[in-house]
Image (cartoon, rainbow, N blue to C red; front, side, top):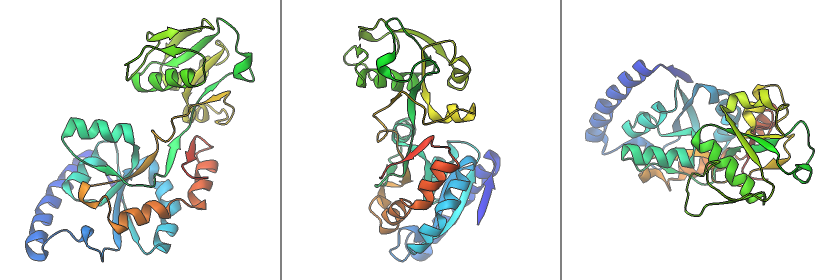
Length: 275
């Protein structure tokens, strides 16, 4: 069963859930989601990930769990719902986003192992077939937002194209220490970078935006080496981190259905965390 929540209705639901859970705790001594006999799992995700969850639902059910999918219209509400207890887990965010949310909201949510999939990030070029062909003085298009620009700069460092100033957690184009190829940088919003691919020597961005522009996610000439850091997984409350049902569904979605969905529906812009 799938539910579609707007921000207003979700907040109303969260308030009702708080009352309901309090009454349940008095009558039953705690939430049934933490019970070893719990078999129905309420999974929250963004609306754009509902099809992905539906694709792996048969595998979760084969592991002995029934899924109730709850759809949210933004990236904040699934974590708010998790904190209120109206869902058992959510499945849409990567570790850096989760840690930032925990820090900002005083929560201690945990990502369950194993993780599921990661967004592919790479360098793409219409002029060059490999990094070795990249000329001295090449101009690279970089994302203008901090997190994705940092990911691009770290990718360039990891491939030996430059070094970065020590001690900078979120490096920018201004934090280059050594630049032996005299690379030049221009910045643009990530969704606009594919439009400039013919105007520069390469662009560094998440593969999903290449797909959105009708280009091939797998045509990169360099691929980031930090996919584990940005992998998406099931997130639960701290007390459920080692619950059998939590690790059970995390293992269940490492399946052919998810691998096929990422390759076909996501056009390779997301990659599985297992081989």
